[in-house]
Length: 423
Ligand code: DSN
Image (cartoon, rainbow, N blue to C red; front, side):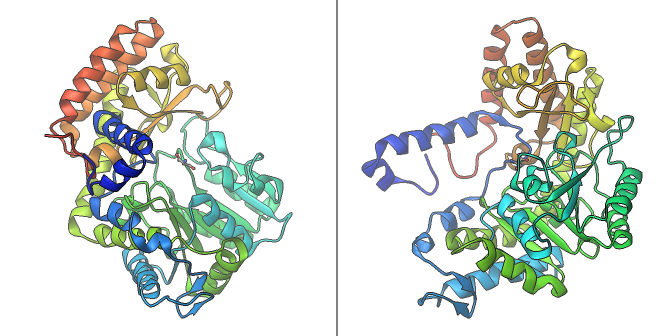
């Protein structure tokens, strides 16, 4: 049963209601290891599903293009104040619709079309919007890409410095989507200063860890910080841009009217709720537990002969290169999904295979930590992953059903925020 319940949806549109119910049950029964996903609280769900979805409010508090902002202005101001407080930032914009629009706003704020931009290349763990060729950011700007080192799997800071001084990018991105190690914000800041570039930190994956004190913060090092709000931060699907006071005006102008129309006020309210939750002491415990779980899971996988990019993890994310197991990422991910373990196939650095059929698997521990799983469960999860991967290599289909049953049994003791099976 959905919490809050959805009786009107069931009455008005049983087809959609049925699919929502099926998705909730799927999330309840699966070991959700997609590194960018989580379970939000019922309070965040309620704000997201509220009447705020009815309102238009282009502009900013006190300067809107529509009347009737008596409640929207305080909601957005609360979200801004909480974002500044949680991250210690001088300025926050909570209107970006999601991570990619937030990143585009950074280009809009600081660059002209054709300007050079530097970012970690996508197959090395970067993000499409950091100047990858198929993205608008790679087509409309001049991308310069840095890599991770082949021997360590970690960002090659010597190469970052050499490239920055040679290519003089106007904007340097640090952060990405598949980086299992701590991002060295002070080192990036020093290079950006030397090269005369704006430093943007994309902390979408690690925002919750930063909020909870389990990863160093880019504040005080980066000129501008972008983040989605729904990964480790455990809020609704949205994004924020944090910056120094100096760049506040440029950031706000870029988001609106530069790039977007009306903000999604229901999302803004839910971001405010998530930030209030992230400011509580139990969120710091949650953030530390995410990392502890990932580290124990990584160690258990290494014990079973898995080749992890960089050898382990400092955060919520583990990147496995399956080459030595004789199975590609995609069939392994599909078999794991059938076995109740949900993750994504992923390129690994220097991957000889294609992005749609790469060599690796990416997994993360934010969602299972929300469910209440701890370090004691991680060796068992590594064993299940191993059983399924080895079963895939041997084309043994029976293993999936066996593991899925055991996972359902385990998860039945760990409640899911937002849904429970009918009693
Ligand atoms: N989709 C996000 C992720 O999974 O990391 C990146 O855009």
